Image 1 (tube, rainbow, N blue to C red):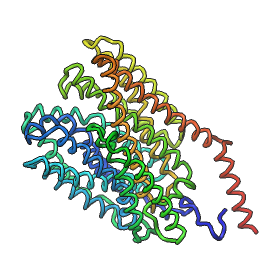
Image 2 (image 1 turned 30 degrees about the vertical axis):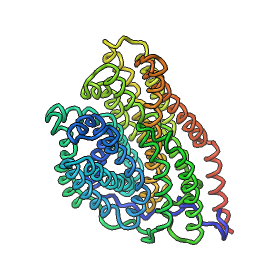
Image 3 (image 1 turned 30 degrees about the horizontal axis):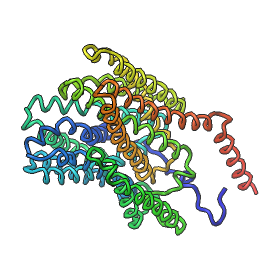
Image 4 (image 1 turned 135 degrees about the horizontal axis):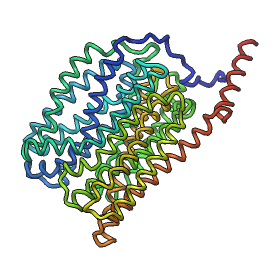
Length: 504
């Protein structure tokens, strides 16, 4: 029930009648290819950093901005980009961002200096951040019911595979084109793919914007969120060069800016204007807050383990980047298969699916940590396959069902901003995990007398704690959602009250 002074929950605003677009599956395939390309660029570059450093004659800290700059700008623009897509049409924002992504990829591949390369990567990150929320919002717009779960299942498979397979693709390109041209090929490969995707997107993506959306843009909210996100992310993405120890005070300022953002957004809602992010999504939209929490905590471990594996396999065992990347392919395969299956089951099993997935991924990662610690390194590459496959199978049951469950009650007119909020928090989690787990790896390595298996085992064990924390959140949410659970009782009471009020 809402009083005269209260605004209705955003989830109470009904979507317009659904008319299936006959081209929706073809449109999805285009957005998934673009999503794969942008997410691949998060991890593919890491294996090419030494080649870039030699070719451009720069320092390790200078070339590190090629990775951290992309991650920073990617995370900064997700929420405003989602809101702009809601306001002005997702197709329009998608096409403009895709053009910028292709041009900046070409500029990065042709960069004559590290400064030009970093600038191109910053722009590329902005374009990727504008593309990402349009993907999830278009799924919300184009699909309903079980079909939406299947679509998000394919989206989740794309996220899992692109994250894990980046080092493999990077290693293959460097091996194919050599040290000097290989790192440039990593960027140039986006150009033909992006051009084809643009042509198809102009034909397949739905035109117009969702009904009921406002073109009013909350500029103050955008600025406050941008400042807060920058202050929080900057020390994390600079962690490898001592950013956390050197810039820890930015966390305090960032928290203050984000608190000011939340206060301002409430004020915007109270004035009947359209916020950049409606904070009532967190307080009044069923499943959104818990889904964001699960995604954030899970990504802390999920994103950090790939850097730990790269450090362990390449630095500790002397493997090539390609060998290191191939070692984690079982995780990618397991995640791709289970994510596609999970998309078909999520409407039937709900949050229980992520509970099962998190239990399995925790078991798989824990077994991997033990194997890495105890198994002789000469046979490790084979022994780690089944444990990583198990972890991947569990991981595929986490990402796509969690996206579906988090956004299921969000109105289509707000899908961009809501998806952007979810992905922003996942970026925060990814940045934190990418900073903490490698940092812990180096601490244990130093204190154990350069015992690489011990350092990797401890770091992976810490990632397990993150998965277990996400599992606890998921279990609590599942208990609320069970028939007869607290949410079920609340919904029944609300419907009964609304019916009584209508009769009266």
